[in-house]
Image 1 (cartoon, helix red, strand yellow):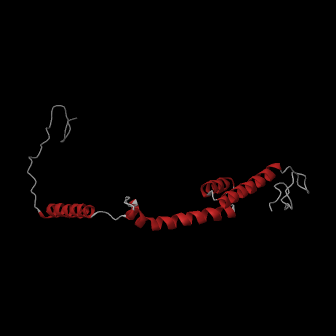
Image 2 (tube, rainbow, N blue to C red; image 1 turned 180 degrees about the vertical axis):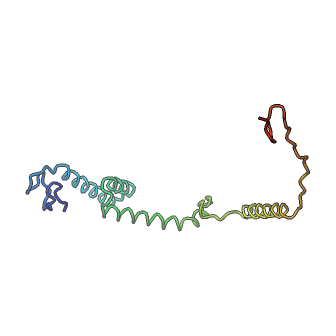
Length: 159
């Protein structure tokens, strides 16, 4: 049972006012009744065989109360069943002539051939660059023009 938000004493029953401090507990009572109503609705849908609607009812309940243990348990069982179904399904997909599941199929051989070819090409180019001697052309040295008249450029300055 929850505690009173005002005096933090445990509540024995859900009433509109706290028995000890007389605080207004209407929101808390509505919240708990809504959660309980959602659980009852989801259980009734499950018993009636409406599993799709029951899943949505449990998910709606988890939006309101993410820590609800019963809803989490039911959803986890459903997710486990779906995962088991997904593991078994590839053989059935093949038998029915459907394409395979995308992450279940390995890469084609030519993907690996392109990858290996690119790696070998990169190593070959690197080897050629490292072993071939290359002589840089000789460029004539650029001599700076000295302007003695304006006292510009390198050299002694006239005072």
